[in-house]
Amino acid sequence: MKPYNVYQYLEGSMSERDIREKDSKFWGIGKWNNFILPLLPEDCSELTLVDVGCNAGLHCALAEKKGFKKVIGVDSDAEAIKKGTEFKEKNGYKYELVLENIEKYLDDAPVVDYTILINAHYYFTISAWLDYVDKLKSKSRYVLIVTTKQKSKTHLASADIHYLDEYFKDWEKLDGIEVMSEEGDPSPRKLWTRLYKSPILDRVQFDGLANFNDQKEFYKELDKGVAPMKTVYGKYIKWYRRNQWTPNEIEDFILGKVKLYDNIKRKGLKKPMILNRKNKIVDGSHRYIIAQHLGETSGIFRKVR
Ligand SMILES: C[S@@+](CC[C@H](N)C(=O)[O-])C[C@H]1O[C@@H](n2cnc3c(N)ncnc32)[C@H](O)[C@@H]1O
Image (tube, rainbow, N blue to C red; front, side, top):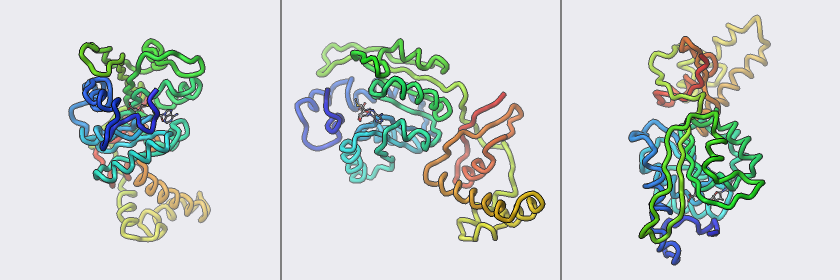
């Protein structure tokens, strides 16, 4: 097994193994072109992607080049993330690299369109993996997984493609790529890709969804530096809730919205907004207005029909 700190070749001098893998369709850019790219949509300009077990972030760079609006890579190997961060900064990429164990990262992670796990899931313990897949259903619209032939260790998630379909049996199985010919390849191996869709998440255009006029100016006023309780919305809530909430409760509510705005600006939406059968937002009206204020024209929703 190749050590994680040299797993991905990014630039500079090459080991003999890097030289062999450079022209292989099963490693590095070749793996992206043959096992990932064909299953991504043409236009990714509105879409977000998390690369789990991103190593030094090679696929993050390729996802950004492909046009994804926001790309985040997460890996628990400090040396790989350090090497990747140096490369990204030197080359002016925008993607974010996070040094974290994915099991810990997920609760704090944004809801995204794509999660990719490229030769990564079978390093999770089976228990952490199953918990992760359960949570992922409300965190990612699609999951793209590349797996290989790997001797199973019983306490880890299985690399076996049949088990993969079993782990994602509640999801919609959309597409896949099967093992390709190894003939003439300088560094062949067996790889499979699967693409699954979350049964509960959809991206929905904002057009005409809802109109929350009372909140619209709030975020503009905050941007201008108006004190939260002096904003039109702050004053409105103070009046509207005057007989139900104490002054402290009113202030906590408004300051909670300021905190939400800060968090969304830094990290995106942590939970999907919820739409009912009449296309009415029943949870997430503040997040919806914030997303619009930040220039988004669509968002990820859980539809309850
Ligand atoms: C075989 S490498 C694959 C790297 C990359 N996805 C690729 O295809 O080139 C597996 C990566 O998963 C990372 N990893 C394993 N378990 C992890 C976990 N629980 N959380 C975050 N990263 C993890 C390792 O540090 C390593 O960089």
